[in-house]
Image (tube, rainbow, N blue to C red; front, side):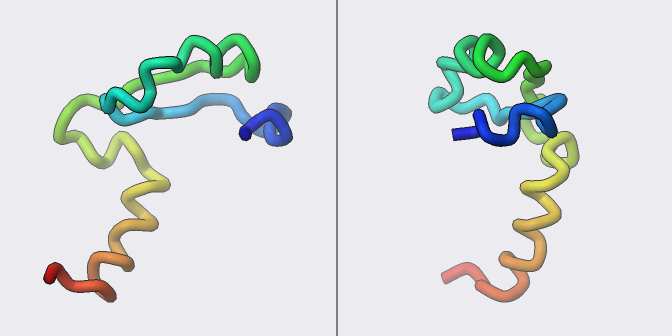
Length: 62
């Protein structure tokens, strides 16, 4: 899915979820560095937190 962005892709930061167990194939296909965020360190995943902040304010829990 990210193959078309290969030239712009320098690093990817993943969560520690099981859905990223196949991260080695991303390294081979894209040739970029892969990092894993530490548990409970949401600031290490910048774009997702920048996106989630306004969504959380707009869509309240419940």
